[in-house]
Image (cartoon, rainbow, N blue to C red; front, side, top):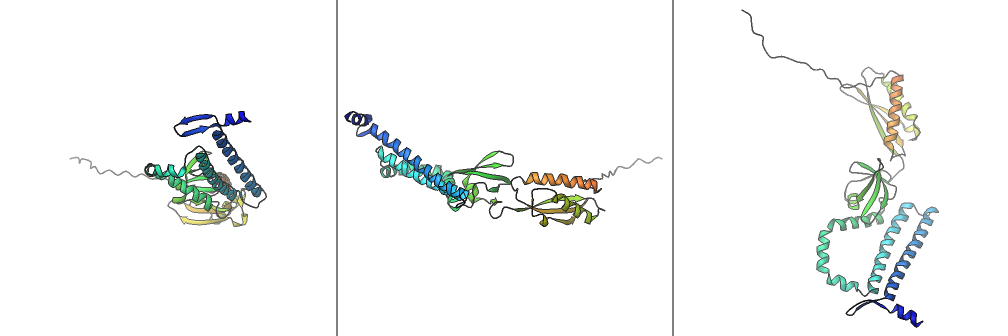
Length: 283
């Protein structure tokens, strides 16, 4: 027992009155392990509720992230106190330094506050599909400073949280799983309008990713310079891969237009040359 006490009391660092003993390191490791165990238990509890449908995935993730940051702040406070660093004295003594750091890291603090807002407000959740700066992104992770998403080109994008909270962002997943989309197409003048509308609706109806096939609607939109403009509208739940859905429908439309001898015009330009030179007269 005395041997164990001697080991625990062994001084690793001795600078004036400041000393770090073996038992100090042991307590720090114990605090770290207890913190990890507590977070593991909370994580298991929250996601057990998610799997039992008592709480959705986005709420479970947001709640866990907030709890995790709070627990780690408390744990770090205990660790600093254990090794003899008083947090209150440290903050008071470095007030001027913290002001300078705060000014230099103003944008970072803005992102952190935005992260706390996102996690607590839950206006954006994991697997939500957002339109940010013209790019469609599926959110994979919401951190305290940045969020990570995947765009339609399978490219991972790191997004500062302030960009989501301060800019105009369209959340395609916020209210409903189905969303209305449209495809525009022009046909040549002289085409049978009723036949074009019928072909557009039938072409869209063939695609398996169309939600509520009774809501498909084709419209005669406008008279253009070289075409009659049409639009077909439909609902789909495949928001993130909608460009692939639209491409497939366009291929079906093109095939049916060929079968029904419906022509898609292309822009033609006539060039007229006029000479202003005068020919010399013959005497």
